[in-house]
Amino acid sequence: MAKIIVVTSGKGGVGKTTTSAAIGTGLALKGNKTVIIDFDVGLRNLDLIMGCERRVVYDFVNVLNNEANLTQTLIKDKRVENLFVLPASQTRDKDALTLEGVEKVLNELSETFDFIICDSPAGIEKGAQMALYFADEAIVVTNPEVSSVRDSDRILGILQSKSKRAEQGSEPVKEHLLLTRYNPARVEEGEMLSVTDVEEILAIPLMGVIPESEAVLKASNQGEPVIHNQDADAGKAYSDAVDRLLGETVEFRFLTAPKKGILKRLIGA
Amino acid sequence: MSFIDYFRANKTNSASVAKERLQIIVAHERGKRNQPDYLPAMQQEIIDVIKKYVAIDDEQVHVTLENTDNCSVFELNVTLPG
Image (cartoon, rainbow over all chains, first blue to last red; front, side, top):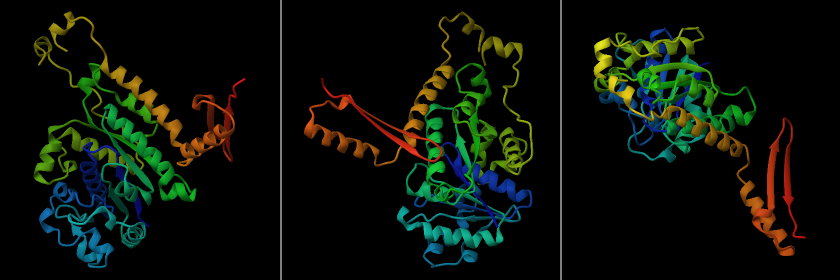
């Protein structure tokens, strides 16, 4: 039985796909058989972030319409054992996804995988609701910024009322807060919401804080999930987040700005 | 923060403004979240029915929905003109 984890946020551009790629890769690196599903029908991007865009033959919608089977459609990651990508359709419209169809695919994947990561599209419309409906756990990706925090709270409301677990009255979806693009220096200057501010407002357990980092853009440029870059703070922070997701207690890092020298302080560099 | 910033007056802490604004709007939206989708329409229809018999303003009607563990209490308060 696989654990189904949705990566969601409400707001676009906060790092859902980057996070799905990093967390999925991290889980596979730890020996878990993992599949990452791109739910963003019409705006496929997970393939680019995972660096497998040229190996897409069939997609999620082909599987739903019985035009291809899962074995033909799943793309095996080149770097990591036990890691697969199920790409979204680029050509169809969002109506191609149905709850029955998605459930059937998830059940089939559940037989052989340990983790199913659902990379949600932005918004709160059908595509996003479809991605979170069957989730056991949810990673809510949030930037320390007003619109992102507000949208995260909206999506938490939807998780608590419109997921399968909520509708059936079973144990609620386990929620995790992942704060991305965190800039400790700006927090210290009082220009950015702090981790504690966001935790206080959203009131869900913190799973990770990913510092704003040049390594993230570099990783997308190269199609190599940032968690592979263990020289970068962002890569290390994602590894910590994976450990916490697996139930380990890991101390938080990169929450304070590196101390500047006296000269840099004076010139404000 | 650079040396020059120490001389600047009125340093406003924008993060605390953001936090305060968020706390207010999030609390407000959470209150509305639990109400059923039909509530605004139902509220309007009830007001229309009352208006057929008594001349009232929309502002004189207060509707609240309170959820407790196993039941919801729908409360309608109409101030009738004396």
